[in-house]
Length: 371
Image 1 (tube, helix red, strand yellow):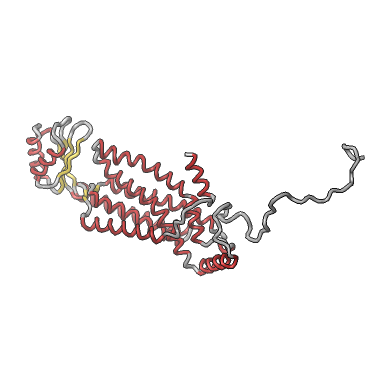
Image 2: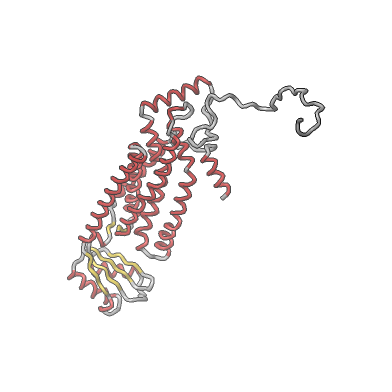
């Protein structure tokens, strides 16, 4: 941990770093490839909508059932003629979901299930779910998503600038698209928990992006008054200075979510945990990626198109070429993000300082106060 802390300090002070902005075309290409794959998966496989969005019936059996999940699925599909989803709960009872059936069919399916499972018909309880309820949830979720995105863009445009607001918006759409596409490819059921997870990851995704943007805003206050760094170089320093913080917060958030997804949903078989945990896991990872590799490089691209930034870049490159000096090392960054040493400062004196010639005044005088 001490090595990681030392690395974080060196990244923060600009002593080491990776040029994320310079290689932005690589990250753009990777993101485009992943996004296209997610869209294709969504178009080809589609989303596996849960019963809340399709309508149907949910049947619950008594405790300590000896029937396996696979056998119960077979019974439910034969009785209903529709696909069924069966979950085994902690007390040994079964939760059987069958989509696309009405009240009359529900009674027949319940009776047939009781016969196949060798239990009393009164022990198999059924509950109908109408598709209108799921439709209301979906509409409210879309409304919430739209309002959230509008408010985020307005806030970032006021607190920072419109280019940062646009970059953050692109990063959020990137994260949502990837998460929904992976849901389609994996085939997990989309439930209200999935919608909650999707809305939750937007805040996490935005958090890392705003941290980098705040650092970038602070370091570019008086950028045109110096000729040492271009905007892209300072943007890259901002990413590196907050890199360890972003990685740490993401890992800490991913660990409990991974526990829900792989242990709760995979090992213990609590399938309902998969709904929210998968969206959170994928969204958190995608959000950390987009804040580093998408949002800030995109801001640098947009800013470098400004006449003032173009002129600054020409001055910086001209000064480096004129002086015949290589690009300065990113070290000793001050509070403003630039080198603490002024550009025209005289070179520091190295070696022993020459002392002035001593005078004879006071020789032979006894120590102590003057008289």
